[in-house]
Amino acid sequence: MSSSDPTSGPVPDPDRLWCMSEVDIFADLAESEMAPIAAAAPMRSFAPGELLHSPQQHSEALYILKQGRVRIFRLSADGRALTTAILAPGTIFGEMVVVGQSMHDNYAEALDEVTVCVMNRADVHRLLLADPRIASRISETLGRRLAALEQRLSDAVFKSVPQRVAETLLTLATQRTLGRSLVVQVTHEQLAALVGTSRETTTKVLGDLAARGLVGLGRGRITVLDTVGLRALTTG
Image (cartoon, helix red, strand yellow):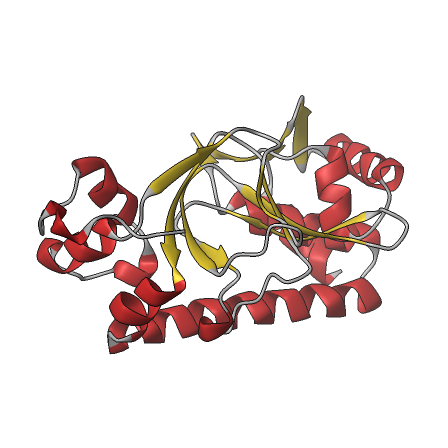
């Protein structure tokens, strides 16, 4: 994907500057520093269910997720989907070997109405990796993501399904808050793919958690009612 016309001036469209705001890797940057970055990262929108990236659509691009959630998953030889992450706004992802992030075998699917800013390889080098502050934050972000994936793999071996469901709900609940309750917008099937079990087993576990007053169940959403109780379950 090509970058925006550099002759458009140092002050970007307000919508593009919005795309850069509240993103951790750009924390503490002045507006004048964000302007050329925003100008080089045009916005794109995707509808729920639409693929942002697939192994068949190879392109070296860095995505900055501004709005909506994105599911990262792989397909097994028999067509089963393994969800490796559900990304929230403020996250970076993409096929960018230069920053230690590869999506060679991965799909990226919009779960909601999604808005991303897209930056090509050359502009990532020129505008992001050349700035030690941003480069360091990218490295830290990818390091945390790798650690989280390794923890999930460890949990799959050593923790029970109810423990993994509780752990995953607590992780996802921190991404969105509604009033005093923590709302997770995820289907039973999506949660099952994250936990690494069947939808039927996940539905049974959620029913048990709801009966204990730990969660509330709704269409396409799960409300965490008792974080202390869920956290106790993860270590029990």
